[in-house]
Image 1 (cartoon, rainbow, N blue to C red):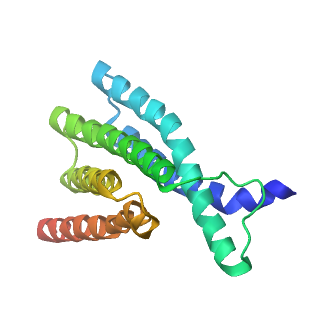
Image 2 (cartoon, one colour):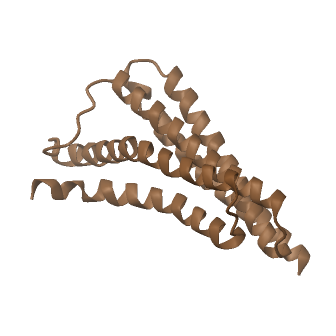
Length: 187
């Protein structure tokens, strides 16, 4: 019963991994490449996902624990404890590096496939949108990494590297807008 409070953190972790998994499935269905580069990049994606899942879950658990603490004024039982800002920075750094690697694998898969295969123009635009989203996602993660490296060891700015990921909404919006315009021009 005590572990049921971890469900929201696991749900958010699942949703985040689902985004990467869905993009890989879309890549596989669209391109059907089975060359050495594609296989290596796909395996690297799985490897980085295994690294990514632990800091991802820790950050979401800490996030929901802090929300619980702000309302109930007590920590959730059995929650992972982040003892100081230094540990939080290390977690953000690990998360950002894994995020960059996963987005980089997907960007490389899409870039490699766009160079090697012929697909319909509309599918090419959609694939380029995903390629651009992955590059934008890597940029956001690098910005978060820089913030994690530069934040002072006092607690005032400790959440900044996590808040930077809200810029992903801008990345998705810009890439989606570009895609809609490109598709409208071809129609």
